[in-house]
Amino acid sequence: MTRHGYIGLGMMGSAMAENLIRQAGGSVTVHDIDPAAVDAAVSLGAGAGASAAEVARVSDVVSICVPAATHIEAVLSGPGGIVEGAHHGLTVLIHSTVHPDTVLAARDEAAEWGVPVFDACVAGGADNARAGSLTVLAGGLDEMPRAARELLDIYAGTLIDAGPVGSGAALKIAINVMTYAQFAAAAAAHDMVASTGGEPAALLEAWRFTGQLGALTEQYCALLEIPDEHIQGELRTMLQTQAGIATKDLSLALELGSTRPGAATLLEALRSSMPAVYSVHDANEETR
Image 1 (cartoon, rainbow, N blue to C red):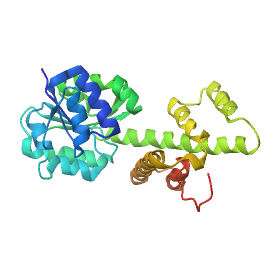
Image 2: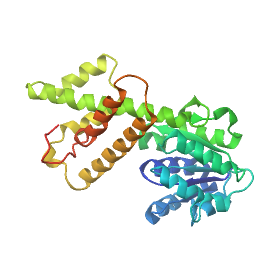
Image 3: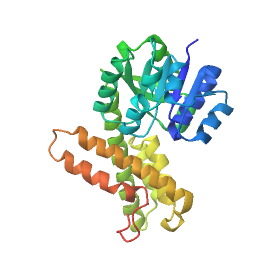
């Protein structure tokens, strides 16, 4: 039986781990800096690792789903990191949305310990993660050990071979650009219709029947029906978090770059719009 480790139990990570625990039971060991997140996973049947090193020590495949490059570096080689628990037969999968260079640096560093690293970025949201129906964008799929490849089948409804290691991370960033661009377009179009006395629901109906309305954008559009004065408390905090993630992802897109004229200007404008897109812009700024 393959022994699984999961490090990083945020919104997406906890949902992926929940599905993994349901499929693999007690062979899953988890770690997170939030004890409550670990306790929730343990209540489902997982074991708790006191550190990333401890998770690695008892695992054949370790999944990492942390917010940013600095967190990946800490999980891999910081105090109590995977390096301290590395062993022959261990494979590491990075699910985080990070620059491809971060994945390649992790791969090169872990290769010195004899541990292969692959990117297996995920798209589809927490509900699909719990259902095991994520879209997984894998880099280096042809080189991936069997246990890691089988794990992706647990996570994925759709598994896409993105190319060599690092390509999954690049593809995820590109997909996020398309998603956030559609969110921004939906917000602008919604307000155009509403400001002229039209019915925004008709906009969605028309958009849907042209075949251009994606499921994530349709979910996002529910936010546009919430009056700004009602976006307070926990809801505002959650939306601020989402806007921060979007801004980070679009910063990665700017770093990744494009040879197309005007692309940087477009990406910068899109990045700057995220607080307004998520309705958490400063009250002194122009409304969306």
